[in-house]
Length: 237
Length: 237
DNA sequence: TGCACTCGAATCGTATGCAATCTTTTTTGA
DNA sequence: TCAAAAAAGATTGCATACGATTCGAGTGCA
Image (cartoon, rainbow over all chains, first blue to last red):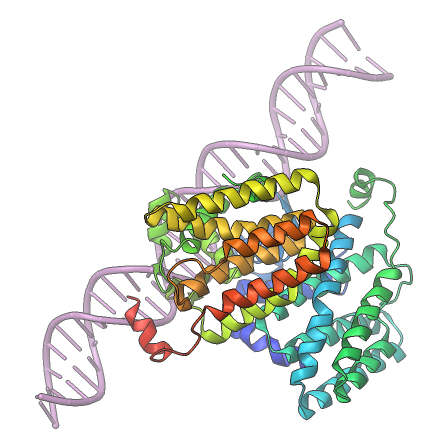
């Protein structure tokens, strides 16, 4: 359990029903790539898997569809989203627009307690990076996304936090598809630098570092279309 | 029918099912204030009203809930959202962060055809402002929101467009609750100026004008808490 | 009169069933 | 042998049914 979760999960989990829990579960599975893009998620299958009726499974899939993590086709079913290069660009364009501003907002509101939380977060990231094995890799991916979410949480705007949740999740999908280095391309050292800027209340620098950071992540992608989308689709089943 | 709709509706309406249509209908009703904040939207009522089963009505309400236009309470029902002053501030903080960037993006991509569309949009706004009566007022509110959506559509980023759809809708709700001047506070002349900047390819100016524009809208609000949220709730039924 | 309690109406949460639609396989004819 | 048509199978879209929960009115008791 990480800090960012502790901040924004309560509002979510207290919130509603079983559908939410299933959504969270599937979301995590998609984000840390246990579910490959294109994987079919039939209502019945999800239902039996979580031991609920199709009604509830359907609601969970609908939520994921709103977040852009799942694409639904009428009378065909739901599939883990398979973002096109163009969508990938839009995800990162959105992050470039929003996250520097979030960094500034967070910088203006950050408390000593927040800094402690950030340090803990960085430690956790570092631990997973040091470890070996696919489980550690998955945790590392999640942790590096959680850094950005923690920043958004500190910024104190629930709406922007939700937008960031969506963008971070979709980024993970994009990196899974188009990342060059198999590992999470989210530089740990850059996160550390950003926290340093926050600690020094150098908001302008925090913002600039964030922008560069996003550029670096995107630069690690190979956004050329590969083999045409039709074939790509075909390969996924 | 306005231009912005023509741009982004197809993807929506082709998309799914009847639930989407009901969502659009309710959304419009909320946005142009035929449904007051706090109004109860029971699944059964919505279902009979649109002549569908509760299943479909429920799906529509779930969508609205994701967009923040409707608040649902477990085992109690759905209500038109009643944003607090704090939420209102967050809506506008988000817009201040995003829309100047959208203005720049739009400025860099705007075509002659887009300019024509903008002019048509401005004309429509002007027409509704000149007209009298509640219907014209509602159309005016919608049109002034559509200006911002058209700009986002021109910017060419589907993700940001969706974010803006949500923010514009919630803004309308906020203005309904906290607006000082009964009328839409979205200055028509400022829209005109922004289009002028776009036409002259003065991106920096377009961005600056947008920021001021948002500030002006927010400045027209009275965000003091009135009589406590509990009483406010009580007054709504 | 005031308070606690019980009962009932309304509404939601969830499961299930049937029809419609899409996909795949089989059959049929050239 | 191959292509086109037809049937079978799987999955979704939607409606309906039933249990669970909440809120409020009415009742009994102090």
